Image (cartoon, rainbow, N blue to C red; front, top):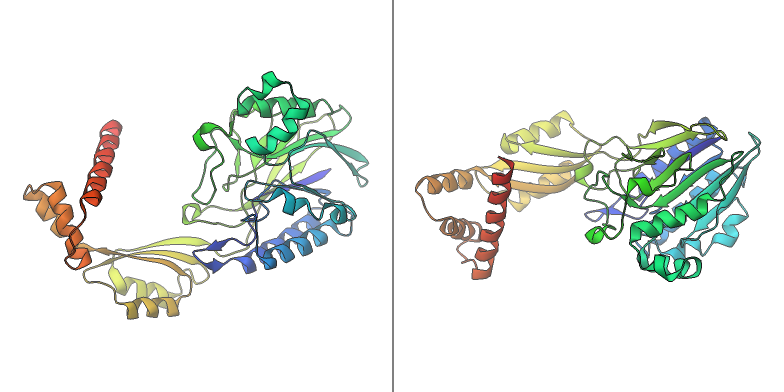
Length: 393
């Protein structure tokens, strides 16, 4: 059978107030084309359907229309679990209606395993679909399924035990797959993920993933990546769009798994072309360089983070002119060369660091004196940076 793994759609998410809904709709159109072309039998969506627990109506409309289209009136199975951004109740509210189209909406973690029949290949999938297992969402399930001793164990042990329990339903003659929305230790993160591993409490070891599974489909990390040190093929499919400038340059994709009972799964990646790229411009040549790039049509269909080196301040009129010229500017950050040179000169004059900071602050604010708390904070941060530099050298 052919399985498509996707995750982290974050429908309704904005970029500094700019709507991404049109780009998300483009992705879902592209996803539909992929599942048809690749003859996908089952779609696994590993959480974070929406960006908030109370998504805008347009995002919900796009979601329900899209999954109905993807299921092809029940001919293709679609299984969706909640992520840490989703409301479990809201996601599974439409589950009875969705089930009529072979769509499974799972809000809360549960211990049963789904049986998915694939008529095209005459094969059966056993799916251990574990919705985002926060401590709060797990307690209700684990209090019924586990003894008190295990409830007192660490989060990692709970997840490992739950996967082990679900894996007992895997069979030699079925395709055995696991899916969850987790942070597995060692994964590469970006700025657009809401942390779920606070203090390490919600971190799962790679070795805790179910060894009996032929593949583990994961959600949460936005960069497509394989899980290292796992005893089973496990992967984050990543988000379909770049949601922060820390993802600039990432190639987005969905993952396709070819699986047969009792055989190793064959995993491949299909790259996506939907949505606007997020790019960073560093204009060391100042405003003239920015104008030149705009005249050349550079990154015409992109969201831009602009860092521009200047000798004088940038007027509001010039900022408006830039934004009118290219509506993709998200950040326009001036870097003042004169001020940088002055700070270097003052450093050579052996002025105390706090005095240099006071002068810089007064220059930037038109004469205002920095409060003592602000100076103390600056000195603390500077001290920490110097310690880090010393440790690295």
